[in-house]
Image 1 (cartoon, rainbow, N blue to C red):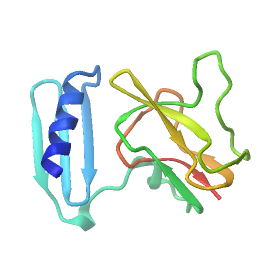
Image 2: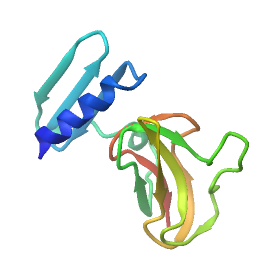
Image 3: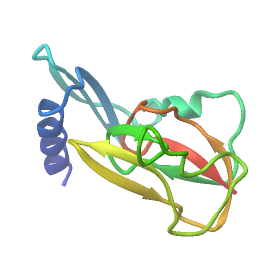
Image 4: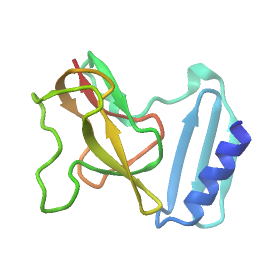
Length: 138
């Protein structure tokens, strides 16, 4: 299963405009660069670096909304539209919170629970990684 995921990530990376990408899943670390360098190495689980959003000094509480794919984060359906949600908004389970674009496919990210958006951890057009926390709902 990991081999299929690695192949898919490499294919999507090759077809994208992204020039450098790092993905960490459990004990697997994958780093890709467009200059032809591809590195796959095993690391100890305790050595796996958590995503940049968890590097904050503050402790995040609630239910994390994570990106299911590597892609570009969009808080709204178009540049002229209002964001789907703001910090403090009440949301219902299944409500669209944002979009992550991968290979020109817009993937709606939906609320996993009813609650209040307590923080949004990424900005418009940020490159997000697989399993990266995008926002928190309490």
